[in-house]
Image (cartoon, rainbow, N blue to C red; front, side, top):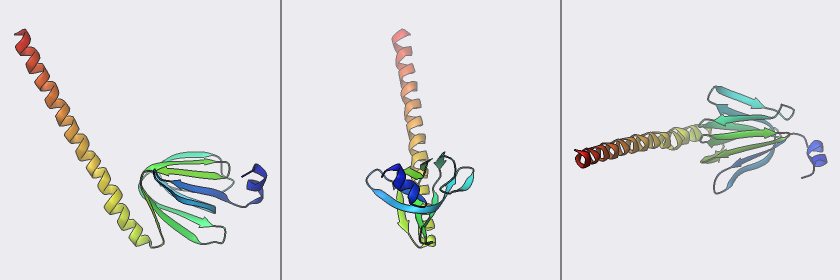
Length: 142
């Protein structure tokens, strides 16, 4: 799209990108997202902006005034001119807020718990390997 077309078309272009698909690609007039320090709103004339997102509900308003929602995992939001890009590992679009909130609680936050357990197991494995290596060194030099 040329710069002149962007200036004539009201609003912003929102793209929510997942590793395997484009979840959202629409013209919007407002985007509300959630970062670690709270929610924020982006409008077409706001300055360029970058933020790390936390798992939550992304709200966006189309030019006809309808409000749309997507549940997104942690990710990155970049606003550049009148384009907003969100890159996240997981996301689901829907209209039922309670269903989307349940998905966040169930799917995305559960992944964080699995990652924490995996990191703990990896740390134990590394500590055990180092301990065995030191014991082996002690036998070779002792």
